[in-house]
Length: 389
Image 1 (spheres, helix red, strand yellow):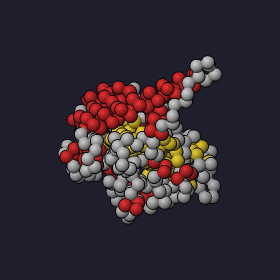
Image 2 (cartoon, helix red, strand yellow):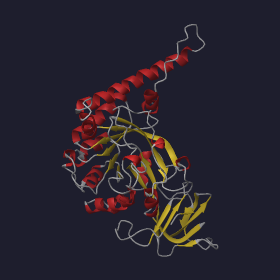
Image 3 (tube, one colour):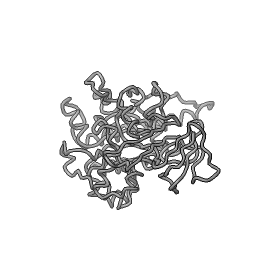
Image 4 (tube, rainbow, N blue to C red):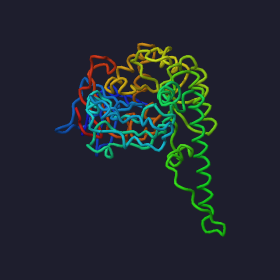
């Protein structure tokens, strides 16, 4: 497939005013300016008047976990029976046939990071997947796990307050996280000692299998980061303190009060995923919510992505969320990067998606207007080299 006569926003080093994109076997094979050597064939796409963008990416959602139009029967996003469940996996939770995936793809959202909610201090592992590409979730996976979900602040407190068990305070939430990380650290040391002893006169017994500790090993090895739900400034600093204590890579999710501590976050250098932007102040820790948050963080130099937190904001409104950030002062190009290459980097999937570059998945959306205009939708959506719209 060849897309030609198209303006290209690559989200990489170079854009093209009148270019072409060649797709082979679901991958981007060539990108460049139109020349006499670029000869279209029957079935290729003449994109005169259109602009190509990388498929949009949402770095924090719960799509497929709270199914559209269902109540408890489709509510699989929170296992509210234990505040420490790092062994849970998003792949066992998501229904890829939920119609919200189709709505997302039609809006140009081609990749999502999805996982469990924020009821538990340690929630489980997230994954990255395509919004189209087969009836089995296994065929849509980009990468899993991509992160371990943690939560601080009001959500764990409110869930377990009614159960009359910990955590009902912020200090208990942090203590549960710290205890589980210490257990996993000790488990890792014991496993290493066991393997080192094999074949020796003093061979040790293998430690009993611990699913929770096993799930945290990639995090402790810095193979994946922690994604930490934190709205309030003090919760954000608790997240940073915990991660420094255990030497973890981490991403702050939501960061509603990030604009109050933007310089401190910039000094830490941690990525932040802002959102939902299209939201009311529905609970006390959101009292300082503002659409200017993303702009303030970016100006301070904080690595920034924008999310919907679907189903809080429906997945198809990711571009609208970016538009609201522009209204709040964020540069438009940076807003586009915050829903393309930046979330791809934050999720550890930039080798496959997030920009229009040779070798990456052919996830491309074509617009005849401003993609951040609420009245504009994609004319063509391509995922893995297949036209989906």
